[in-house]
Every structure is written in structure tokens, then in C-alpha cells.
Image 1: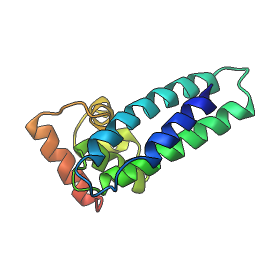
Image 2 (image 1 turned 120 degrees about the vertical axis):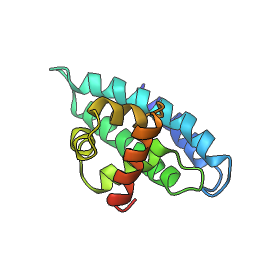
Image 3 (image 1 turned 120 degrees about the horizontal axis):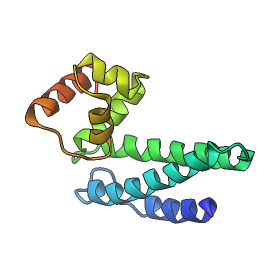
Image 4 (image 1 turned 45 degrees about the vertical axis):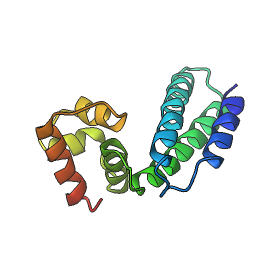
Length: 136
């Protein structure tokens, strides 16, 4: 079933406009939401004692595709704070807890921002400072 879902997402990703197109961010955002759900399902399946190699291979493939799309979105002109944070943190090889500790925020806030939940002005300012410090 994950193969069918991933095929659908691959088609949608391939149909995206150029990352510089103003529509890219919104369209990519919809796909990213779906990929996060698929990652969640595959993570649950991979965590079971009877997981098969095909489950972890599928999970790995979906995560790579997610990361690639986040990278493209983060480099576009309409990049969201969450996209920029996710990519900067990933490039720096920091966990959400490490990134949060670095700017005096909660781990769950970093995770929430990365999935496009809102943050206060002060939190947003701290996150932007972190992104800048990480070279993003």
C-alpha cells in the first residue's frame, strides 16, 4: 500500500512547478503534509517486532523524498519558517532537542514549527536567529 501512496506522491512532486514559482510553496506544502502522514504510518509499522525489510526500505525512501522536497521548498522564495528550520537543522545534524536547547525553546515547539504550526513573535525571532547561526 505504501508503494501506491508513494507513487501518487512521486507523480504530484514531479508535477510541481519550478521552486521559484509563487505556487510552489503551497502545492509542495500539501504534499509534505501527506508525506508526513505516510512517514508516521511507516514508522509505526517499522516499530513493530514483525516489521519486514521492505517496511524499513519504504520508510527510508519516503524520508529521503520528504527531505528532498523540503530542501527544494526551503530554497524557494516562499519558503516557510518551518521548511527553513527543518533544512538548516538537518544540514547541521542537530536533533530537535539540541536545536531547541540552543535557543532556549522547547523541543515540541521546534517540532511544531517544522510541521507549519504557528509560533509567537519572540519564538519566531529566536528560530530565525538559529537558522542564521546555522548558515541557513
